[in-house]
Length: 109
Image 1 (tube, rainbow, N blue to C red):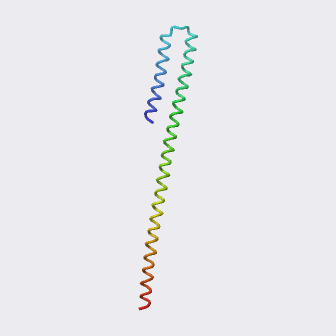
Image 2 (cartoon, rainbow, N blue to C red):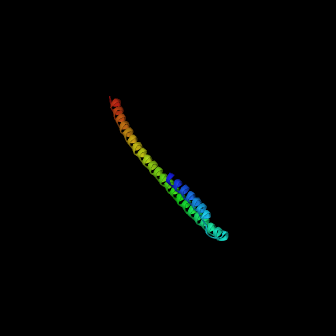
Image 3 (tube, rainbow, N blue to C red):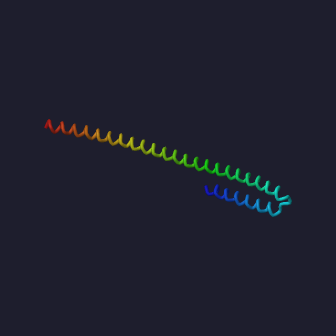
């Protein structure tokens, strides 16, 4: 995202420098120069708008990707916890069966 910010600043600075040089070296009349400046400003605005839109899409994609990654991690964690809970339940059931068997032996003795 830092590169996009630098690109945006570069575009704005380039547009400003271009406008300033255009005004300084303009061979045309003021009216023609103003029209050209308006056209250039519109082009710069459109370019800036496109760059901002592109930046917004990249940020949304990055956030979406991170969200999906987090969801995947949560699913894996819940799955792991579920398997571990099953293992614990199985171990407890086994231990309970052993205790019941011991208890039966003790009651017969």
